[in-house]
Image 1 (tube, rainbow, N blue to C red):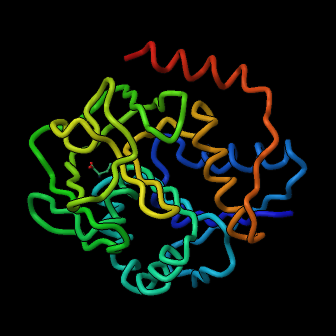
Image 2: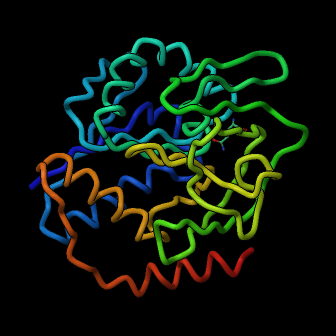
Amino acid sequence: MNIRIGHLYPDLLNLYGDRGNIRCMMKRLSWRGIDAELVEYKLNDKVNFNDCDIFLLGGGSDREQKLVCKELSSIKKDFKKYVEDMGVVIAICGGYQLLGAYYQMDDESVEGLELVDLYTVQGEGRLIGNITIKSDLFDMPITGFENHGGRTTLGEGVTPLGKVVNGFGNDGNSGYEGVIYKNVIGTYLHGPLLPKNPQVCDYILAKSLSKKYGKDIILDPLDDSAEDRANNYSQALN
Ligand code: GLN
């Protein structure tokens, strides 16, 4: 078995080590004897959504999001098809905001990919700090770091990734964080997210393998004692 991971615009969207999420996915695949390959798509590269089994969109500053925005219109249609066909996506912070209709800043608006029913508006002050959320999908709390000026609102009936235990989350008010739609996970949690949230990582890997090989794939458990310690440590920072 093998999995190809596409990193969209690593030259611009890669805040706080979001690239570490890819290393984590590759490592957890290789520990199970599954081959993993990374494909980096820089700005202006042609993206073929049939070529990868997971796509990662990392975080970025407002300036970088504006630069990427121009490119997004060219991939929007194919990306939508990939998502609707249950393609796996993990999008962090700035990348999460780009999944939606738009990111409205004070002076200008960045048009999003319209893959998920949500939108983001810049608010007063930034929402910064360590964050822990609880998702019904996982036993372990999900923990990380957030730093965003945008406040994200989910459309009616759209499922958040989890409830905020500590921190701000989508908008600092709703008590919810992130989004889950089909096989897309969007979240404000940087850190990077996956090394200290191994259940989230394995969820993504199992979804991509099951889709690729057309059957339910249950991953062999790993010794996650170091990852669990990191998760506990990060929760305690809150
Ligand atoms: N520029 C966006 C904001 O400030 C996203 C920042 C990020 O990815 N950390 O809301």
